[in-house]
Image 1: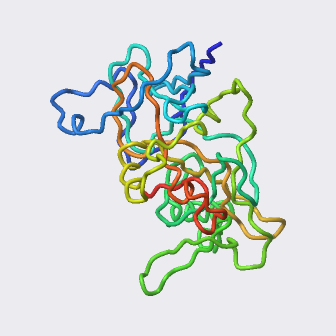
Image 2: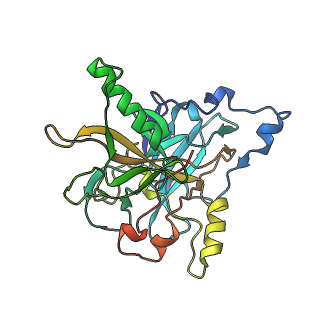
Length: 309
């Protein structure tokens, strides 16, 4: 049976640097709008029939339906598909629009399976969700520190916040914040479990708004592709990206305050116009190093889960 879920997935999330999301009734852009006509129109391999789909998520005010069914680009696996909701002629959505959760799972200190995502943020400008808002890593650190000061009732008090699994420092030469893989605090600590491993998937899969993102395949890769070709194809073939959700926690009684990952979510990587009433397969970039089967995250293994803003 087809599982149908109705979710107001954008409720409670704020996109301060983006135009306001519109409801399906207002998703029909004017033909005279130059900006609307310049937006990339989503296109992909046509998906299976509705009877072959395992589940569907109607994303409330976005005017689209996300579905999971047999992949058209990776035979023998499942894929993630998108189409317009019934009664919607067109839906123009901005970059960073939240589509669905990637998966529910747990963290491990080793890469397990082909859906594992490594928590590795390469830049202070990498986008994250913190306190239900989209912001940069540097913004999340600042927001967490401000929140601690407000809780203490002293706006002048100093609060040092660390990013789990990363070292952060100020580069005097470039005069910029630098984020790199490390312990996440200025003391010895146990090895950080940075690999997010989704829970096991049954067949047929038990689908929800929290786990559909994991079925998105990489449309840019094929066996004979070169690295340069792959990187170029990711710009045209893949419009979905992963972004981490962070929360603030204390690393033990009286210990450091840490921003830690909870789970990744799937968002649009760029502005996209959906005009297809039939399901088409979405794509997300796993990263060249993933396809080269690099063993450790310190050498770049794991799916890509960062987006600069």
